Length: 462
Image (cartoon, rainbow, N blue to C red; front, side):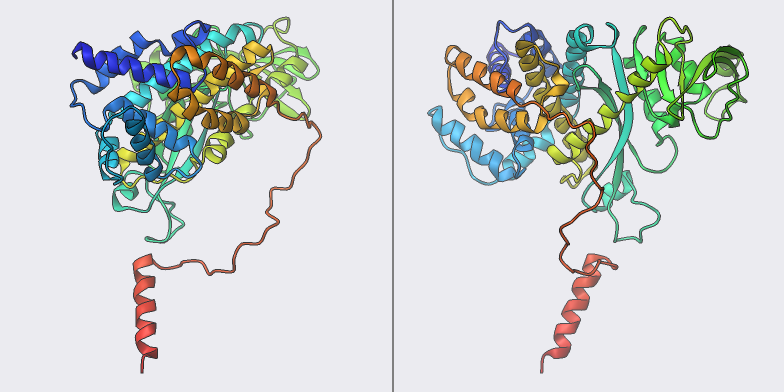
């Protein structure tokens, strides 16, 4: 890659940092270091022609498209047109076709690597300050998203079997490893909602390489299995999760620590079909696991030393797992990723990657604001932060770097003031008060419904 292109990539990285209120003197600059960025872009993009929409311009417009509430490609094209005119360049076409083609050319691995790189860097920077007793705590869970009903999407992510063909929508499952301290997505994996190797346990095995010795993993009861605990303990990772309801717990067995707390031996179960005989033979015969009854709930952990953590502290730690549910709601509702818009599997994967990268970029600005204001980043509102970043974006991009210091400082101070209300006793019903329009449900494929309407019209024509 020649020096001219390298310079332009650094310029676009510089603009991206400005947009999210990061300056050269900030300690988090290394999270999006220009030299690392150029290296990643060179590896994932390679040689390319300088067009209206080069890779980094396309990626920035894609990010802005997600930050915008409309999500329209036409908005991205209009933004590119205004940028070119403001820079003294010739105006580009208002057609969204060239931009959509540029998104197709964009390498999937580019937003994926940037998302994972930024998430890992934010976890490294925040774990000591906001972690649990100086340890990195990571959350795992999975959620689902739907997408347009195209034949290609149906083949990659089949719809639910309970829905008739042509009626439902393709659904993908996303498993994510999220930092408790920063709220950033460290890594993620995508799979269909049905079929072999599509379950949440498989997704966790794909992401286990991101867990390091000394980490603590919070997960739900689905992962409370001997296989998962053994896999994680072999990496030096402690787990905290509720007991699977299918396992019988006898609190009187094993080494009793208190009337509601004991350490029990979990023997190795029979070999599962997905484990080779050689790997099964190398596994230990069993492991010691601590089971604690707190508030009528059985919590399982590999932290067997009661002096390391008490039952009350264990319960308080597990309550923090709920943060990942809030994070998924933020991604799917606040960023509007619940229903994707791309028509092909390749673009759906790319859309998911850019959504999660955008989410991490907003978290990046929130972490910086929280550190300056000396508050916890999870005490700040993501929705308010996103709105402020989008409001300041145009001004931050138009100014030179020296002129952005005051704007960036104002943006960060504003984000730090957007604190979440503390409502510990709040109760809300999971129901909608506003009634939807009384339209019937579509029970046949849309094309069939169109033909039925046309046939009905022909009958009434004299």
